Image (cartoon, rainbow, N blue to C red; front, side, top):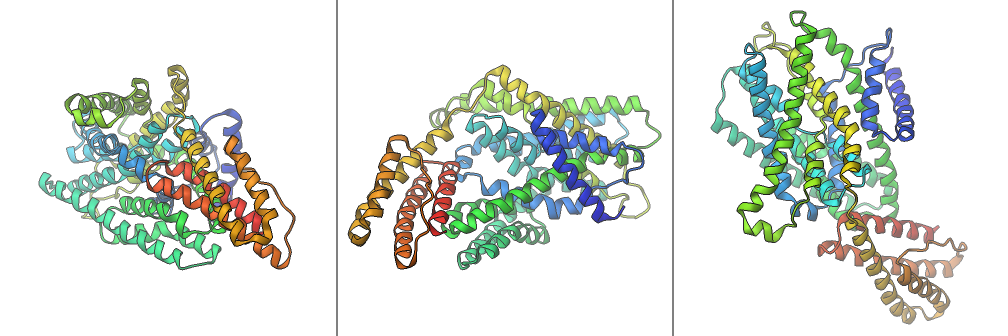
Length: 527
């Protein structure tokens, strides 16, 4: 089958499985993966292999950039401690304990190879975590922690992965050198992302062409990723840093038409990439089974898969509780600064450790041979099989049971986002009313329009809802003046909610919800 036909076939499968997932009420990453497994087992279908370079260069950057774009820096900073404990501490702990377990199960597996597997399966998947968490209506802090962890943990895991791979290929390892490398790679990634972010902001702010602005935003992830990889620093942290910066400045540098156009374009890109990634994960099963060494029995492989998967799951569950409570017990400052955690929320965070495409791509990226180009890489097939097993166990097993656990524990949305949105609406309406008073003096010939707008905003103060009414198409100079008045009111509202965001009164989620309504209202006024 031609590659173009394969891609079109995958897109059809994405559409069908998405419809099925929504009707069945199953998170789409799970059904996509299971659908990929089912397709891969159909006799006669061509084998589709997931190229690691495609994942790391073309797929991962836009997914990370989009997730970072919509992440609130304020909420990340407020939850930096728990996010760091998960994204750095837990990843390293998982790497070490998985290595110990694998070496105990198979003493013939070299320690460096065992650590390599630990680094591969240590990071939860960013796409799986956010798509499932957001869908389930969890408390905002839980979602923020899961999203923040998934943005940073890939960088920690990939640094550990590179160090372990070098140890296998060269036979040497230095703890001091590893620690220094981790710092250099991390700081360097953030620095490159900072430069890329400012460059993207500078370019977009000088444009007034919505399609070009959206195209620049789509190229932004690669502008951050490629220089970082070329400099041998963390491409993940570079993309995340650039995404957060552009998302922070987007309300000021993008016009309403560019934001609305970009929102649709990015939704399609992310939807398509996510769907194809999880189907491709499932499609790898036949290839993985074909490459397994004939020297190991199915029972032995299955038992190892179960033990390693349980280790990954249990390490996270054991880690989150002392990681949550011990710092509070030891530090009065933390107790004073942070709200007391809820035990059932901690359990949800512990169970939401689904693995995904980064782990599989890292496993597939292991070279076939050692540097001599002759000696086979030790236990490569076993590492790929165990990685796939962990992905299935966590993504399908934990992903399917997570909604049941949430309902059983009675965990739900804490209303934080709704409260911030209500506050933002009230501030926007008050800003509009204040601006209308000045406009009545500036435009005395249009008091009828101003009174109508004032009446709408005064009514909104009773309910804090924006009423988007379609008016008649204005004509000539009067139309221009009417549009100018309405834009002035909308600009006042927009600046009011941006100010609230900048002062930390509301989060980015509330800002973007109101901002989209104002964008649509502005476009309607100009139509």
